[in-house]
Image 1 (cartoon, rainbow, N blue to C red):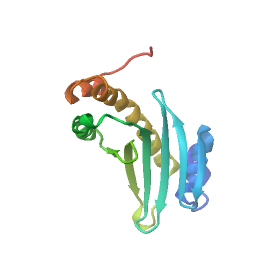
Image 2: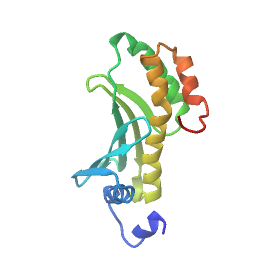
Image 3: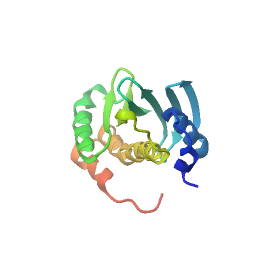
Image 4: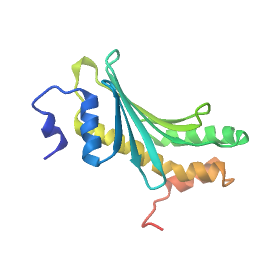
Length: 166
């Protein structure tokens, strides 16, 4: 049964859909409120913190996927250059670095104006895209910040096609 078939009968809150998806994937999650949920999703490189929040004001489902990072101050300029290159490759969502919180962030907003309803498949794809992008660019960030590689060299690690697993 497709995820959406479970929700066809009723108009359901987007965060309820996210909670159902988290349960079906067996992710740890915490329903922070009616309009917000936080979860931990295990990736190959690390565990990602993902928060989704529904804003009825602008009818947007906002997602923030974060992981901790504390690059040396002298690497921030190069990190921001790498982030620009990464964002050029991301068609949906964007990366940023929150220096005060020491967090690398991938953000995306699904606009549902006019009473549109997000499908479970859309939300699941949104979450999976966040993890896949974080996993794709994590090695590039590491190579740049701690490996001394240039942004261009670091991006080659993200662009290269990987086969197998070490």
